[in-house]
Length: 53
Length: 485
Image 1 (cartoon, one colour):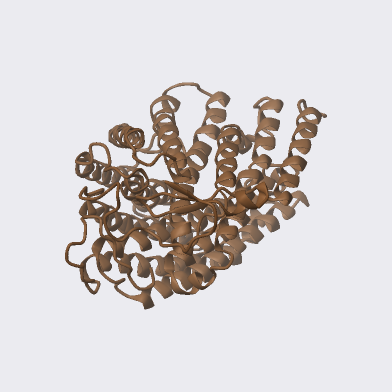
Image 2: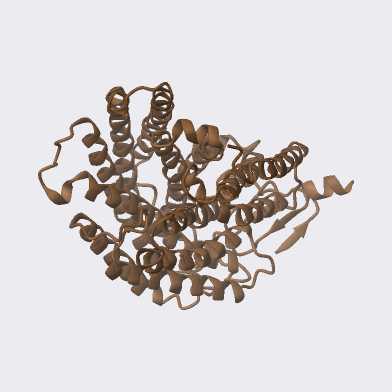
């Protein structure tokens, strides 16, 4: 089993509440969103730090 | 906590004693049910006041000759009623359930709960009467006068201590995401409430006060309503779906990105104001970056529910959680993009903003709290849900009434903004909004009727639901499996 599969399938159980959760992954499409927003954040902050008139 | 290498059948909340809770009563069932009853009352009261306020948009003189029923007096009663009356009362009650369940130990100083319950609810009642009588601190969403703010602050501080000490004494080695959110929500709000009620009304005149108020009001939304609502949603999500949470990793990304970006968001209320330009830019950037926690939460939500859609059909908590998540996605995307300067130019001073605030506060977080109330009430009362039919009406009148209202407010905001940008006279643009206000009022009343049915149902469940037999020898923490919940 790869690390990816292990993360996806390993399950933790909280005994008192009965809640279970997978260790889980961050899907690739979300990583793309994070990266895109980070680039936009830097660009927008630099461009609009002061009023362009 | 145990770690298992492969998927296992989900067994849900332990019905009987567990190794960590055997023989120890984790919570005061009567106290939590009292909170559910009180929250039900406030969640009917505050939207009803909202409906009266909405009617005034159509019939300007409606109840306008009685000073305490005028628009300016009732509007804060509606806002404070939803935020602190309905939502927060439900959250405090659910905290008394969730924290001991996740920690495996009873709430620290649980016997304080009864005092807190009465202090909180009497303070709220006095607060709403005070607001109607015209006693208002003048800070939006922080409008309670001092004689109400002080007991409310005391409750928040005591609850914060209870949550933190209980977590510190937990027997579970790992801290589930709901506890992260609840701890943060209480700590942030104990500080922010004091800021909004004890500092802002008495200091920092002028534009500085406005800037700080922008932070305060958005901290109420982003550092109380959001984390407390998400704590509840994350707790009941895997239980309602009868599946493990999709990703622990994602839940932490969502929490820390919210904690990092939200503190800068508030000043977006004052774009194009005399507040320094760079401050506005930071607020805009932070608002857009909130897409990260929102989409992360949504991925976790739907990742958990995939393969478990039957629960959507069978379980009212599941229905309200999924509906709330859908509104969360729409409302927060609206909120992020609304902060952009071009969108502000179009939507500021229009009902687009009101549509956004209803989508997030009511559409998302009140519905998450409602899901929790549907889950907890029959289990702790050890009774079946009083009426599945009333719950169905609650859900579908919410779907229809609220969706129409939110869409109508959004559309009318865009229409009015477009008219104003085209140079239409302001009064003419207001006159053009009349049909939209009428639809909004009717849709809001439909939604309120649904809420009244639902919360009456929850209240009646406590007293008149069909009793569920408790097995002989069941532990103090025994939880039945009521139908539909």
